[in-house]
Amino acid sequence: MLMWPTMLASNLIDLYDVVHHAGGRPILVVEQLTLALGRHGLLLGPSGSGKTTLLHLLAGLLAPQQGNLSVLGHDLRAMGDAGRDRWRARHVGIIFQQLHLIAAVSIADNLRLARRLAGKGPDDEAVLQLLTRVGLADRANALPTDLSQGERQRVAVARALVNQPSILLADEPTSALDDGNCQTVIDLLVEQAELSGATLLVATHDRRLMSRLPVLLELARPMERVA
Ligand SMILES: Nc1ncnc2c1ncn2[C@@H]1O[C@H](COP(=O)(O)OP(=O)(O)OP(=O)(O)O)[C@@H](O)[C@H]1O
Ligand SMILES: [Mg+2]
Image (cartoon, rainbow, N blue to C red; front, side):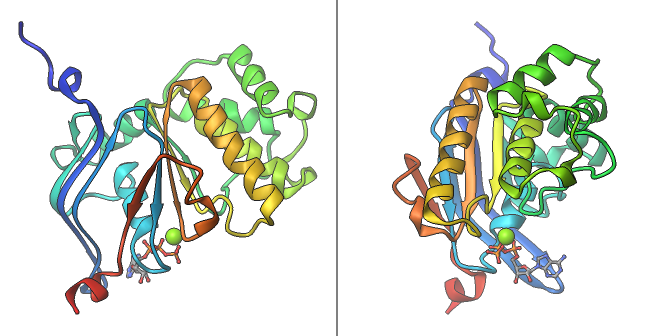
């Protein structure tokens, strides 16, 4: 039987010999990195080791330069900018370190806009359901500025999931938090990823998270690798 490559892919992420340059120097070097579908991962590495760069590559926000970069069986190097945008809208949810909520509209509208930007039709039931899941249904009409930082972070989690992604990427979601809140946020991410059927990849230098996710992926700074 003939199968499409996506159906054969048991790995969510497959990277080989990936190098990314900026400012005339390598800022990310990955010989090999794999993450199986459904196995949540922690991407650890010191500041400057390229964690955010790697998340942006996986999300299709950066154009790959060198190496093999396959996510869900899709070759990201074979896609143009528009192709990567479409691919991200279909498959990726991302929670940035700076949450990037739109301050001028309500939190429900932040979720509605995320659907619209992904080319999806309105679905107020899905929006309300997600806000309920993160405990913010009664604040649906509040502006992001009227919420606490923890509440805003929960909105960002809900927004990242509103397009039912296969991959949920989170950049440093806990490094500014005390131990109690750190636990709450990682529990929320795992719980919500699982409810959505998404695989979670958290980039951090917060070693408190080491025991919280089953797969540990480590990046070294490119300079340290050469030395
Ligand atoms: N557009 C760019 N031009 C030049 N250098 C860049 C660019 N983007 C990132 N860098 C550099 O690449 C390196 C890796 O950056 P990146 O943000 O991916 O690291 P990180 O592991 O996420 O660090 P942190 O833990 O501090 O968030 C850094 O030294 C950064 O200064
Ligand atoms: Mg970073």
